[in-house]
Length: 437
Image (cartoon, rainbow, N blue to C red; front, side):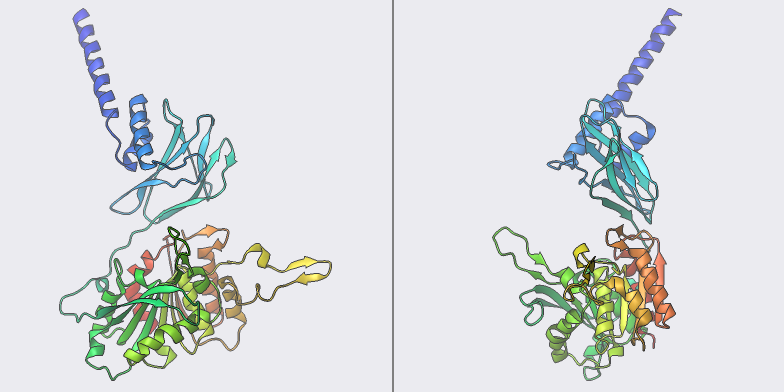
């Protein structure tokens, strides 16, 4: 009996030593943190390993004010393991809170002032989260979201399909509109145009162009395939980045002009394109003058900018592709009319019916006769929801207004977040539909 007891004690000691050695192994990913928290296997050794991982990942970052972002490990099938960290030596409770009543209580690591929580997010999910310390929610929020889509056949380069040429046009410095703003831009010329240069080509302009002519969802490959199959006309594609102003001091960053160009709902940006970018294109290539042969495509603010171009310069563009469009209220509080004893005070230079894309649903319903526009709208139900509005609801309002007023439109809802991934994934289908007569 004594020998058996000694053996049992020996086995228990070995088990404890083995367990501690496993727990003491270095943590290398958010998934490993999540697995440990989910199993409740966070003893002193494992806490120390998680603490070491977090401090390396957040080296030099402030983890006490709620501005820190999450860590994540992607899942091949879509989604990710997400970890949040917070530093506080005195808090009694810390919770990660999100919309739709979701929350994740944080666990304080043993012998540490670091707190941690985790979640496994599936594909097509998101959360706008903040930290709550002892019942007080900290200002500011961050977003976590994931989406993954299969690649359509017409987004892949195929043997035997004539390959168009993407020409780097260098840096354009604006002159009359947004003077001094610098931007990169590119022109795609299909092989079919080169064999018939006297035949006017159609035109498509991509806002935030550098993101559409390179990498995943490359629009040049899609156009190669669709033009070859005669699903879309022979078209010249112009990819234009938003402008930025050079830094005024050494070491400073250039100042982006994207919001001024894309979010201000006036004809100015479309006129800039016409006079300073497309004028160069028309000198080099024969472009159809018919606005029904012209498409503008964009994502987010670039999408609402595309609609603005067609709305205000219907003589230039009549076909619109809008991915996760920012049809939200970009006004500052001070831009609204203020009531006083003297009545409403209204600065016409600040506040007007063309000021923000939030106004378009009302304008679409009320302007008669309606504009000559064909529109594709895409958005995901996990798009942004913040001080400017709810993006998905805003896109639903756009779709409802277009339907009410009898526009030729297509609304493609999904489960995605605020990114161009879904739009790029369905670009072959979208381009085919928007070009249909």
